[in-house]
Amino acid sequence: MADATDDRLRLLIERIERLEEEKKGIADDIRDVYAEAKAVGYDPKIMRQVVRLRKMAPDDRSEMETILDVYKNALGLE
Image 1: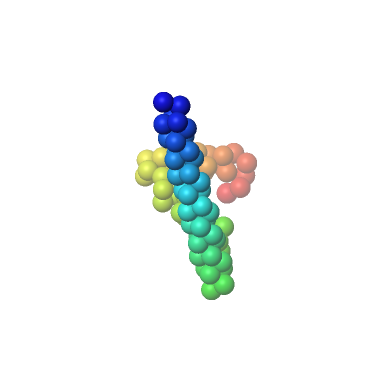
Image 2 (image 1 turned 90 degrees about the vertical axis):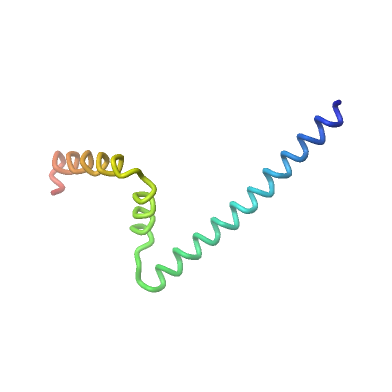
């Protein structure tokens, strides 16, 4: 039984290692896309913010923007 457990653990660890490698490859690809965007004149920082906003639910995004406006007004940034 210990051998089966050891094999199962080894297989799980190997799967995690493969997925970590794939994740690294995808992160490299994403970095390349941002570099390409920068090379043609886009601002990667703003693009990252847009990507983050697009991931949010519309209600969450609206709430965040409202709170941000309140904070900006309180600090005299608008």
